[in-house]
Amino acid sequence: MIPLKLAIVSVAAVVIQLTLFVEVRIAGVAPELLAMLGVLLAFYAGIERGPILAFAAGLLWDIYLPTPLGVAAVTFAIVAFSVASLEEGLFHDSVAQLTVIVGLGSVASVVGYALIGEVVGQRGLIDVEMLRVAAIVGLINAALTPLLAPVVRWALVEGRR
Image 1 (cartoon, one colour):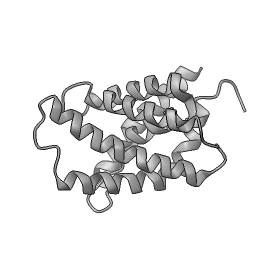
Image 2: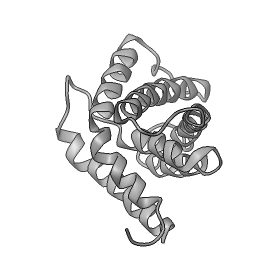
Image 3: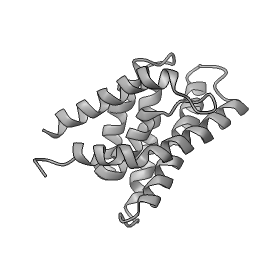
């Protein structure tokens, strides 16, 4: 049942990203729901499953991006591994803590995507504008954390609650 719930959440995130957030932007920047999903998956699923799940979410997002296939997937997996490694030493009782982790993880995803994109030949991804976009994405995703975190927790729990 968990794989089905994760698929539903991932596809819903892509659909919302490609429909609602094409028009709705803050300071000209849309949230990066799939980056946020990758961070939350790493936080809740842990170091063994989190990066794999984040890679799958990134691969799903890569289908729609103009960069070579796998750039988002690799980026999300690296960020997820970092988040899951950090998460092992943290307490899980603070929404504020999770909000900060999602914000920083989202910034790292945007910056990592640009860096890996440059490495594989996509020129023009790294500039001052990218840093502005990364900061805004981090703030937006942090603000959206209380909405998406319960959905990701639900997707990772087997059975009914």
